[in-house]
Image (cartoon, rainbow, N blue to C red; front, side):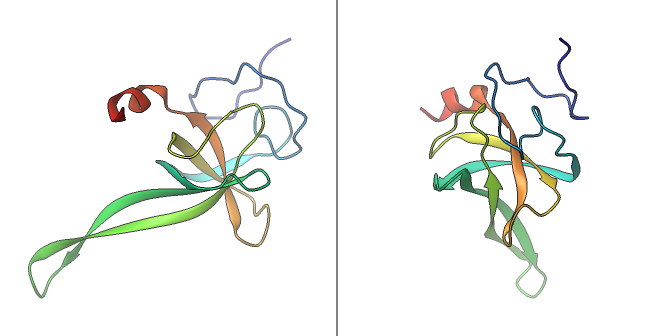
Length: 115
């Protein structure tokens, strides 16, 4: 059996799942932008909160300020994640009122640096 390609070069999960919103084991398609962040909230029922920081330039003061972006992402059972993990997420069709992203990869190399 060949593995399904999702259009992005990521490591395929070894576990199999029957989640209807899994990009690897169902027909959910990915589109739009891809982000890397840290899980700061959850896990709720297959939902986590992912956060990443950014810097915004303030022209009046000629300086930068730190801001953060938080989004809800779908967590599939085949990619086991917990709070504090670094993940890659990608945009998909709206899965609920606030959930429009799905986790596509757990970043192992950045996990070891933070510990």
